[in-house]
Length: 401
Length: 92
Image 1 (cartoon, rainbow over the protein chains, first blue to last red):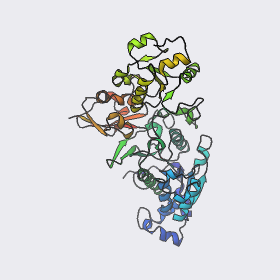
Image 2 (spheres, rainbow over the protein chains, first blue to last red):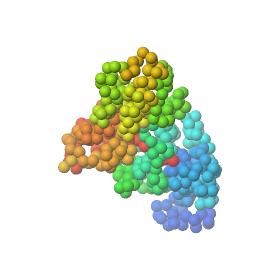
Image 3 (cartoon, each protein chain N blue to C red):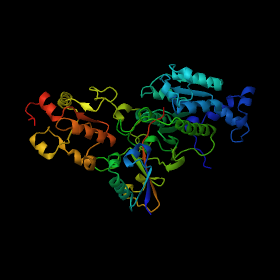
Image 4 (tube, one colour):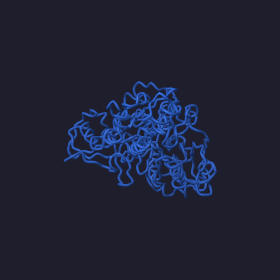
C-alpha cells in the first residue's frame, strides 16, 4: 500500500482531532466505523474535526453530502446558489419533492441534519468566482468538485492548487463518469490533464445532453470515499490516475495521469499565481450575454445575415447549389459544395464556426442544414428564401433566375 | 489482429453509434487516420482544420497518455487499446 503524502493543509487535522471528543450517542452512531482498526476512535475524531467543502449540491454533491454527513464529517461547507427544481429530483437525492422551490442550501442542510444532527453545515449562497473562491476555500481540508461547467472546473482546480487543498474531482455525461484526486502534493492537477478547455457549446452539459440519474450517485460516492480516505490518511488515493466508469458496459478502467512539469499552475515554473478570468479562459465572454442572440430555429433572414456581416461577425457562407447556378450569381466569399456532394465533402467545413447555408430559394439548403446538424454542427442556419430573397431584401444587383 | 479504439459517449453518434471500433495500424497516428477515414464525421471532433489533435481531447494508448510516449508516432501492437477521452464537465 502506498503511503499518502499529507497535504500541508491537513497536517494539523490530527491535532484538531484530539480536541474532537465523541459523545456516547456518537460512539453508538459510529460503532461500525469504530470497530474497523483502520478507523477506530482516532479516525472517527479526524472525521469529526474535518472540514470538507462541496462545490454544488446537485447530482454529484447530493450523494457526497449525504454520505459524508452520515460518516460523521464534522463540518460540511456547501457552495450553492440554486433552487430545487422538479427536474433535479431524478438524481439530486438530497432534495425531496416537498423541497421544490426551496433554496438547495436550505434543503440540503435540512436533509443533512435529519441524517446526522452533529454535522455543522456552512452554507455559501454564492456563485463561485475568482473574487470569492480563495476566501471561501481557506480553512477547509478537502474540496469536492461537483460543478457542471468548464469555467468553474478550472476555477476550482486553480484555487485548490493555490491554497494547497486537495481537489476530489468527478464529472459525468449520460452513461460515463471520470474521477481523480487532484492537486495533492507532487500530484497532477486538472490542467495537467486538460491544459485547455473545449470551445463553448462543443461538450454538452447534463442539462443539454442528459444524464442517467444513478450515474452521479456512483461517481459521487467515489468522491466521498476518496475524501474519507484523505481525512483518515488510509489507503491509496486516486492520485496520478483517472478512474473512468462506463455504466452501459459496467466497466471501470484506469488511465495514468502525470504531473506536467510545464503546467502553468502547478508546474515547475508556474505562470498563473492568482485566479484569472475563467469565463474568458473558456471562451465564454459574450456567450452568456451575446450582443446579438443567435437564431433559435434553423433559419436566418437575409437582413440578419447582412447585419452580421456588416458588424464583422464571423460567419461562413456555404452555397449548396450546382456550379452552373453559382456562375449566374453568388454571395461574396461563399464556398460552393453542391447538396449532392455534401455527404462526401462536409468534413471540409469547421463544425464550430457559425455557418449560413443557402441555395436558390431555401429548400435544398434546409436539407443541408438538417444534414449538418446531424453531423454535430451546432451553429448552422438556413438562409430563408435563398439567394432570391437576398436579391429582394438586401442586394438588388444580384440577378434573379 | 487490429487495435481496439474506445469511442466515448459524446462521439458515438459520429462513429455509427459504436462504443468501440477495430482498426489496423502501426502507430497511433495511423490508427486514428484509418478510424477517421472510416468515420469521417469523427475527424473534426479529433483534429483542428489544420490537422492537429485537439487539445481538449486526450488519447490514451492502453493506460498511457500519448503525449508522454511520442504522441501520434507512438507505435501500437495488435491487441492494444486506444481510448479517446474528451474533457467532460457535467456534475449537477
